Length: 363
Image (cartoon, rainbow, N blue to C red; front, side, top):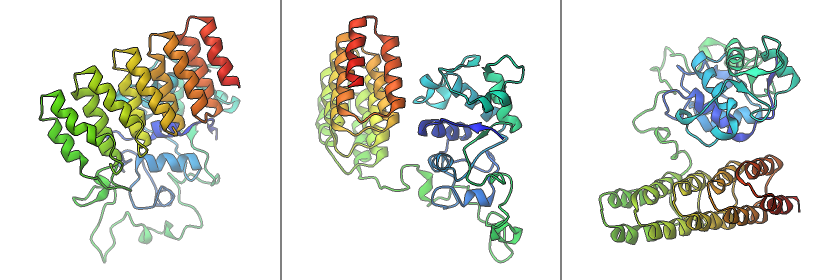
């Protein structure tokens, strides 16, 4: 059975986010039929199929998915129809068109044969979704090719017996549904799985009650250099600065300092890169992105988010300098280099400026 190949980490994450219909950062029983055998392969086997854990397991080949429901399949088809535009957007903001072109996704010949139902040698968004629903196209390259862990138990798994299924009530113990969040469960907050809040969020809540940029700045100026914040707090901080500060100067200085924070998490770096797109000054955008590029070791997804943000700068000179700085400062894999080249080709009109970036990229 053909499966999607050439997927990147952000693609697997997008797929699991599409499956998470109720947006609780988990794939619940109502959203996917996950057998115990598959569940035991996901993340830390804690009984909770988190979207990030499931994405990681799909990428590693521990599990694979088939026979999605129509609503989820439509979302995933939408994602791939405009893959380069959707990868860093919330599911609700995904855009789509009628076709999944080669620029959107390089399908293997096997996938093309399985999905191209009308034989026109191309893939429509509708055909793609129908193949996911029918199960003729699977997601993930499972190591266990003889069975589908999402629908069939592994022959050698001793837990296949219904009496040993932890998701089925046992006579000697009350039923506990691991997919239902408990009041004291750390999984109610997706950022609490591996880290604790520092308390900075309390200060941020207080900042939101203030009206003076000066008073806000006094508090935020201390937080942007704080190194023990959780991911959740860092993302709250970016949101507070970008939405709650009206002074361009104060906002820029705060974001510049935060961009150099050595403890900045990847999710917060992505949110910070996105926040610059709303800034009115090209100079300020370049300053913030420059600090982010030079101070952080960015993940592939964060690199692509920064590349998109650089593309929103109207000054081609500033774009060129920012792209060159990124090439010099970041270790970029081929997919990110290709993504950068496409953005340069789309956003720049000057051949001279394009060549400057291409030359830097090819060194």
